[in-house]
Image (cartoon, rainbow, N blue to C red):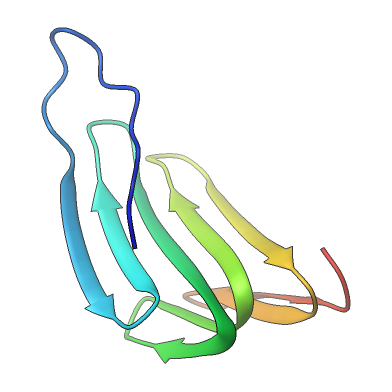
Length: 88
């Protein structure tokens, strides 16, 4: 998996961690992003997030969280909040 980030001149380099096949956690000054992508599908769970589907994301900001299913049907969870989608 490759991540492209529009880094500002004075902005720190994001921290990029591969958590599993098709799963990455990217930490920047403004958010922590979990990215999920695999043509064969991804099933991933840790203490904070879970995802089951082809492509999706969790964006964790200081005061809000965005849950996204981006391709086909899927389920994404952050803590106790879960989004089920039949299509993106």
